[in-house]
Length: 261
Image 1 (cartoon, rainbow, N blue to C red):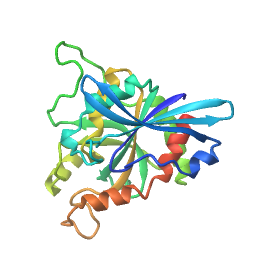
Image 2: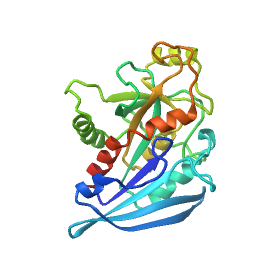
Image 3: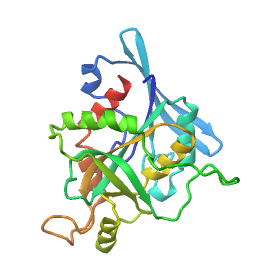
C-alpha cells in the first residue's frame, strides 16, 4: 500500500515510529506536520514518507481527539466529517483506526489486541455526508474484509495465539462522554456487543460513504463497567484506561507495518 491513513485515539496518542519500522526495512525520510482545510473545518495531520529500497510509502496520521490545544476533544464533540474528509483529500488508499475499548466478552481480556468485525449503533445520532439528499449506503459488512483477513492472521502470530483464538468482535457505540453503567453493559451484552467505545463507528460510516477501505484495530484496555473480576462495583478511570492501551502498541505497530509493506 502506497499511502495509509492511521487514526489514533486514547489508544494511540501520537505517532512515534518504533523499532518495528526499522526491522521491516523501512526508513523514515520525511516527517511534516500540516493542517488541512476542509469544508467541515481544519484538521492537523502528521505526514511521513518512508522508504524501502527504491520504493516509498506515505503514512498519514490523524489524532481523532485533536482540538487545537492537544488531544483531548471529548468524544461527542469530535468533527468526524472533517477528519475523514482530510484523509480522503490526502489520497489515503485505506484507513487503519486504533481504538481503546472496554471489554465485555470474556475472551477479550485487557491487553488483548483484536479487530472489529461488526458494530452496533443505537445512539440515534446520524453520521453521514448526505444530509440534503436521500442516499442509502450499504454497511452489511462495515469493515474491509480483505484488510481484516490480513490483520487477523498477523495479530494471531504476533500475540502467539492458537488458531482457534477469537480475534473478531462486535463494537457497541456508546454516546459518551460518560462511561456506561453496570446495567447498560449487561443490556449491551445481551444485544450482541462484545466491546464498547465512543467513536469508531462514526468514522467507519463516513469512510464507507467515501469508498475508503477501513479497518479498526481494537485494544482491550479495561473490563467494561461491572465486569472487573472480583469487584463488579469498581469505578473506571480515563487515565488508567489510556495508560493500559498505550502499553499494548506492539501488535498495533505490526499491523501498521504489514499494511505499508
